[in-house]
Amino acid sequence: MVTNAVDRNRYADWLKAAIDSNGLYHNHKETMAWTATAFYLPAAFGLGYWANRVIVATTASILFTILVVLATYLVYRFLNMQFRMRWKAADIAVGLRRAMARVCADTIPQSEAELEVDYGHHKAWPRFIQSEIDLVIEESKKRRTLAAFAKGLLYEASAIFDKKKKDEEMKVDDRLWTEVPSYFGVIAATMVAIALVWW
Image (cartoon, rainbow, N blue to C red; front, side, top):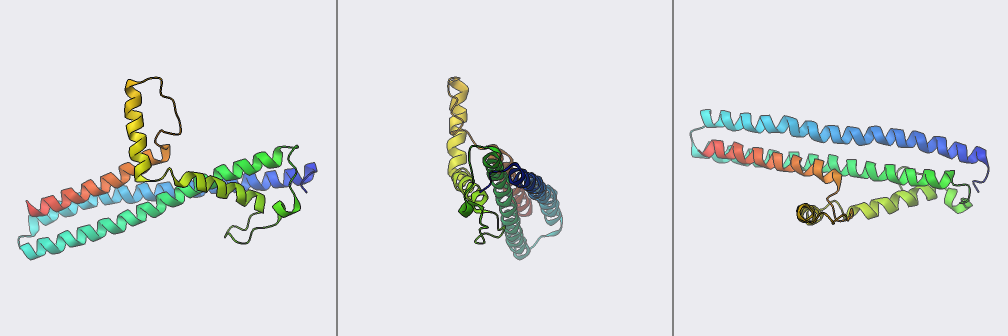
């Protein structure tokens, strides 16, 4: 059991290092997603403009449209993967902080079973840490959906007129506010590129 100060300090130091490392990973995933978006938007506009000037045959326009749609799908999948890993990294950080709170609370001793390494996960953390992380990830899954975004958007729009509404659970998760515009930007750029070819 983690009962003495040396064990608690050792776990606390390890958790601090894991939180810092996870923070770097989280920032990297978000940076990758926004970099891909930033490169795709002008590329789509530029290709659409170029195609408008160069392509005259209908067959070439169809081929260009197919290529742009395929590129959009690939970029969308990349963005989704990066943002999904960013969400997971944020959830892991919360789980690590909860585990840190358990370690630092002198009144909560850890059993031998909780301290065993959980080899079922790729990180191979002690079970008490992995259980905290799993709980946070499970809680977070329902917030990263289009339905949750739409529901939260409606709630926030209605809260403009009803200042008494303060339910934080109903609001759009802040992470979605940075993710959804990226998807809309990619779709809008694709539509403009296709429209430029056909007009």
